Image (cartoon, rainbow, N blue to C red; front, side, top):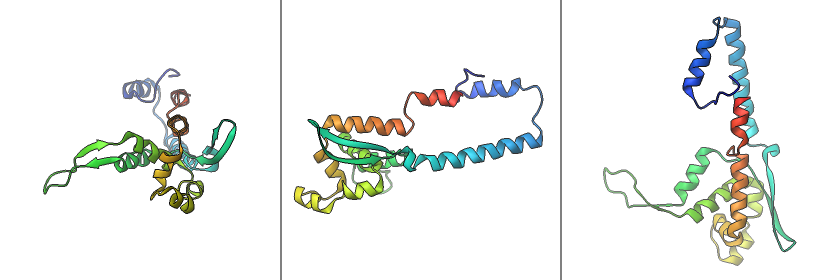
Length: 174
């Protein structure tokens, strides 16, 4: 069972069928407690200071500013996608139809969303900076001040801390 992947239902079914004896009610209860404990811990671990990563925007040796990012959820990622997508005008009885998604804007929304709330207020939603640059929203600030490569590296880090790294499969197998 060491080489079993958690995404293969057949492998799970085979592993269950390999058990010699059925589990006792005490074993089932202990397993449920472990599962509940694991679920609650995983939820708390998702967004806390230990999962944050500091990002410095540094060019030619000069640090311009820094902020912290956090993991994002699938729902947050989908919301960023919707915010970066243009939709056709609604017709009665017809579902909403996406016309075009601005990938640069989507990437900016991800950086904006992944920024820790306290830092987002100081950096991206900084009223003085928004006014001086003639911007209306913090997500526009992301696009205005970050170079494409900087944004890309930040997105790689967001992916990593959000569980899209190579180590996830190994952790799932342990």
